[in-house]
Image 1 (tube, rainbow, N blue to C red):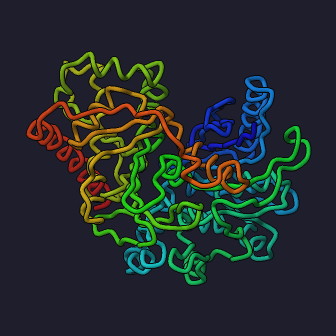
Image 2 (cartoon, one colour):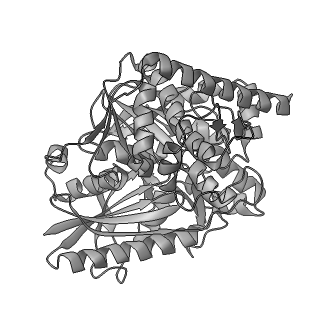
Image 3 (tube, one colour):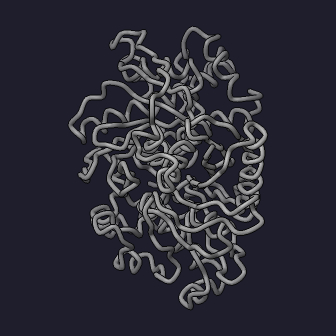
Length: 501
């Protein structure tokens, strides 16, 4: 029985799944890793720890798979990863030159603001489909080269390698034989031209990034190499790469124009596939590269909500008012309404459709009667409000009306949240039986490359019917709730404006 190993390297942890030819999960393992917050707005990871954690979890998943079914033969490995996070390492030693700068990091907000003031944003957007924001990789790379002694000279000499997390994992899996990325990840760096599908020399000059640092860009579904001896029982073909949201889009079976999904993870990400057509957004959404049916580069519109599940994690780790994320479901149910409490979790700024890097988390409407249940409910509601805002903007840009919203990610397992989500968008929400579609997409890309599945249709196969949530409140009730959210967001944006005036 052929099987595929999927490495899903996320912002707070790594999940690895082993899937057999019938897309059944026969092996699974997970581990969190350390988050570093050295200054307000700064977020870092230890790249060496990410590699060690990912390898350990991958080995554990394969071992569990073999215990579940001794006949399985893991023939391919697919990688999906947190996007925009960058690592720079020494080509000879493979040792990172410092901590990875995470996609959530806002240290380059001033640099991005200066480029906007110079009138560069539209110029950058024409090439990349992205807005000038610290979220993306280019300004992070520039900052690292300019603020680490001797690093720029080493980069220009060709002694260093740069990559998003997929590149870092592939480098280590192949013992340095492959320094590569795929178009979905490259399109998130702000150094890649999504029309020419190549690194852009003018963008490299703007951010002063030497081309010698960069990985080769390869298709999302292709055999790139094999794992180094000793990592697993035998070498495994490394054959699929996609950024987490594009992998989830593919794993949901959205590989053609007009199909879309929302993922609830650390952040929330809504993508609408636009096929071969690059759609320019008028509402602050991103145009990004997605996967076609063969893993070939096509396009999608994307709206990113920076903080979603991370707000619940903050309730747990920062405030200590819950013990686990699942507890929020019962807490939200325990109160009849939000009592006017709204939580805008702009810990690292606001993403689409507002794009304000200076925004910070805001809670409004507190009274003496406010309980921890109201805060838990407000954190869940914020995910749904943000998703509704992005979906409406996306419909306007693409000229379509959503018939349903397909969902995945950890937050989609919260029934209360899914019901509130369908109430806020007033269309059905569909949750598949397997919500780990990010890993599923990575497995599909790898498996198709080596022939485990003959096509994406073969890969998707016949799925069990999804769980469907239908709206239970009237449009008028929905509008009243959403007006409160709009007031809260305006308050957050006003606070940010006061801080920069």
